[in-house]
Amino acid sequence: MTGAEEDGPGPGPLRTDLHAHTDFSDGRDPLGVVVKAAEAAGLTTLVLTDHVRADTTYLPGYVAAVRAAQSSTPVRLVCGVEAKILDTEGRIDLPGDLTGIEHVALADHRFPLPDGPAHPDAVRALLDEGRLAPDEALRLLVLATARAVERVPEGRTAHVAHLFSVLPKTGLDESGVDAELLEPLVRACRAHGTAVELNEKWRCPSVRTARLLHRAGVHLAAGSDAHRAEAVGRFPWVSGALAKATTEAPWTS
Image (spheres, rainbow, N blue to C red):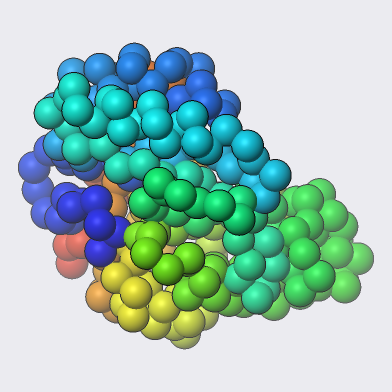
């Protein structure tokens, strides 16, 4: 698993939030306020995932603040970061020094192509001009994500954050996703015990995709992607999506 003791996909309240931000990156609220919100939501585990890039310099202060907070809350706080997948080799946009970082949320903030991360508008242009086929674009995105799972730095756990959130920005959707396409990601997640997050903010991946992953033995977990404290641990969409994805009822979306 991710090392964050995620909730199982069955009925009952969700007590782990794999994805939350503070004002160390682009969250609105300071760490202490976010932690208090996790307590109010009844969470047992909160994974903090502030955004980083290779040139990020705030990590020492961030790690120190999380460590200090860990001693004053009943919530298990996991010191993590969120980083984008760069290319189809699965390179991850991480600082070289990850001292104190326990967890990495792997994100599709840009579209990972063989020559690097592309803005969604650029990918849309490639698709419109016929220089990139939709099925090939989906294949490349899944391959990049699978390889990123395999490249997580040693000693850190990870999960896949907001899988396929980049697709609508390019004009694509998940209708072309099937079990065969997902196979590289399934293999990587199962080999490394990596969960795929159902993301409250972006409402992705679709229930249909989540069900395919679940049936293939990939662990599904909840992430609020909270950028405001009041959203921490709140899962109105995720709770229903998890229930649908892990039952045999004929849900299609």
